[in-house]
Length: 205
Image 1 (cartoon, one colour):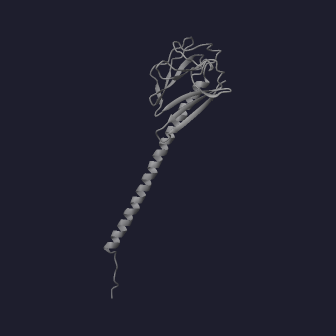
Image 2 (cartoon, rainbow, N blue to C red):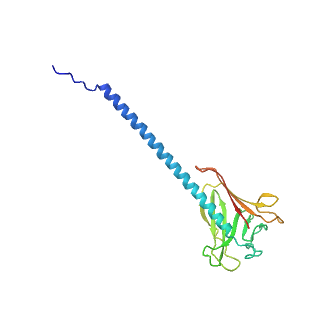
């Protein structure tokens, strides 16, 4: 007698195909989730690096500022309301009807005894930085009106000064204020994966 050979029934084949399809779907969703998570992490990493570069540049501009021995009683031409308790090379300026900006006179990167003006301000939701040509004589060239976008999606760019005995004080400072010993720069981002408020403190000599 011949032994009877058993094969797969149609139902068994369909069940096997359904299981394979289900496993494939689960695997695809897992891979898709991993890919999306990786993309989000990469975007967050890029945004954090952008913030670090901006704060690093602000820190460098402020630390290289000209002091009173270089710029005695110097203020940018035609600009009013200058915080006198800040070093001569650091000014926070509010023009009539204009956008307030932080202006720094700093040593030029060439390190050849020249100085240049750097301006920071918020234009809409873009943080801007403008650099003037370096010079040796006063008045120094003014930064261009159109700057470079250094950071997007910024809702607040605020600078405060630390006054001994008074704490953090908004700029510009009133006349007669004590010498500031530090500056706090605040950036606020309410959109994107790195939304939040970020602060950088720079000590002043």
